[in-house]
Length: 398
Ligand SMILES: Cc1ncc(COP(=O)(O)O)c(C=O)c1O
Image (cartoon, rainbow, N blue to C red):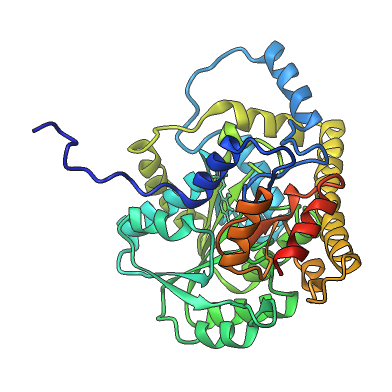
């Protein structure tokens, strides 16, 4: 018998599977709201102009492709922490934060998962219901137990902060609390600052260890403003983790650039914890990939490139928000009576449209419009050009 003859075919990833079906679809005017990447007004996922320029500079000045340290370069770590907390933050002043550069935000989450499984065993990972589909898979792959807390209320199209906070009160002491820093994927609904304060209070009182997934910094309200929740947590919780991704806000998806930052009770413990953390990297990918982090460092340390990057992040954010408003207005102009205005209160690329499975299927089959089965839409897949046919089709299936 051959090695794989008894294997059943692997379950395709539902979202990537839809993208493959979209690519095969030959109908003109097809629309993809299922993808997980930013698209510009031409429907392209662009290379940001400061990224192109930084790469040009690196081409001439790079002198070695020797290995990075297991935790990545020191400058990169410092820049990541400054983006998270703002330079001079007490956590940084007290030397309590350490950063490991990882292959993307997924790599950061998996490094955290392996570290928790090995060094903080017996702790369950609590995640929002719903959450990014890869979250439970990553933690299960590290053999961790997961559970969920209530988060999104489909009836009100918003965060159910009452149920959310009372569920946090029931989480066993010491467990890991996975939170989306901003631009919740898939719900688009984030806690307001008062709710973040309450989350921080409960987490601190119950000795929970937050693990903050920060994949969309700058896509919500601004690069600085989007870290408000994280900074409120840092005021109350002495120990936590942050998984950063620069896939979206630098458009560096394929370069796999992210980071895991751990905050410990004091500088000595932070050093010890980092020592164990990097051994997890050593037995996995050994040391992180250079190119993406070199681009990030070049941009963040050059005032002109940094200013242009901040502007391009603002442009992406503003385009997404403009599409949210235009979508709601165009549906209303088409005579759709259902209230979609909640979409303009949500943040980031994703939201639940409220379309059900049957409507999603009809949109794909009859109109070549691709949406995830849950009704989650990527607003960045909308453009001025596809808005009319999109809204016309939605009006038809409603
Ligand atoms: C919530 C969330 N976390 C983490 C990631 C990981 O991003 P990457 O591994 O591409 O950096 C994503 C990407 O879609 C995401 O949506």
